[in-house]
Image (cartoon, rainbow, N blue to C red; front, top):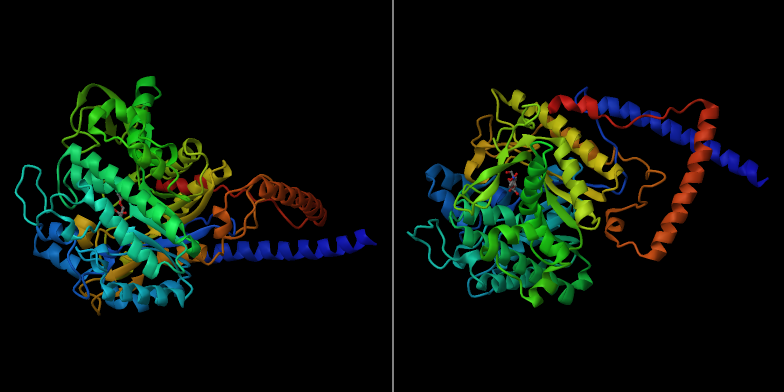
Length: 580
Ligand code: PNW
């Protein structure tokens, strides 16, 4: 009796699943327009898009200035105006939120403008807080979850010791992240934000890419505030870790009732040895220590990598015992920004041109873009010459994080590619390379997941074309084209590119698969993904997996019997390889 009911139910399930599989496959063909190859993901996997305040808002509402406003103003009037206007998000946020909702965006990485919110005396600017309340409201009522970054590079000008400086180290601002005071200023800012905006925000990051700010802004002088000093660079990195850790401790102490998860966005390229020689392998490991270990090691292990200490000696600040405790464990998940990869080879005569800034300490390795063996470039160059399309690099970074940092939940919080504007709008909107890029990088993430990395989400950078820092409007990373000057009609009008439709189908969950059977982690929502698996839960998971496996066997047997279901190989690696 029991078994015949079971068989009837099972046949029903198999018939439905089989119909769904066919519908799904049919849909895949329909939506792919022959370009790109969709990759399937567990239903809990979060897809999102990213932006940052300075790149999109403009200075609407006459907000006080940041170091980036001052820095690009020095580059000329055109750059100053680009920054002043952004993409007009300050005025257009409601229609932009609608455009996102229509595209199926459920997760949106955005940052808050610190100068818009706080004055030098530590008091809050009400108008700024109201603006973000309105932005969050517009997003929430359309079902878009904000993932909020406190700081994405736009340090308030009031953090500087003086606004116009003429020192050997250059730049538009002295002090700021070099000075210890900023750590307290940042904590005060975080406190004001958490207390006024914290309710309902589920995901926070403190600082987006401390490495880029320290290295490009204070070491190489190529980003704001334009300083060139290896001591300042390392001190800035140190202060950013301290500021981050204090903000997280404050949240955990005072605002834990809001239930948010916190992290810091760490950017990392993949560093591949240029050959199999032990020298090159060692050099690449050391380079990777500086690429990611510089910030991730203190957070996950409690100190800077030993190789950095050995190379940089007293240039590298020390943590006090209290700071070490505060910094270690100061994240709830790993937020990774990943864009490119390169080869590294060992060099006998060390040079002072360093990854750690132009005036860096001599470095016993060299960065190269060609493999020693094949003499082939590591990957195709994007519009930006620093960006090389290397999907396998993402897989390697993810597995490196899994191995080195104790298998954390990893959110890919930024990944994207820029493509130059072309002849006419139709050509520009037809961004097939971006479609292939997305599938290739998602394929690489999926591959890392199959090998055990706990990847919980992926944010494409960026939703919109935006002001690409020193490169201004010229570099276009968006899924949506912005017609800044109105050459096709209205100024600032947004036009969806082909890649938006393509990424939409991921965001809408059209490529979700049933939770994988067997070894995969069983979870149903993004929130589940962050739960630390305790032993009781582990037991439940094993039980669930066992049940899933049993059902799978019966399913497979019944399907084989019915002859209706084929097992499809999902790995479409080769088809994607035209990109690399
Ligand atoms: C990101 N790298 O920075 C930033 O977070 C975004 O604001 C920016 O628009 C985007 O990249 C595109 O440039 C990066 O060294 C910093 O590979 C460093 C690297 C890549 C991106």
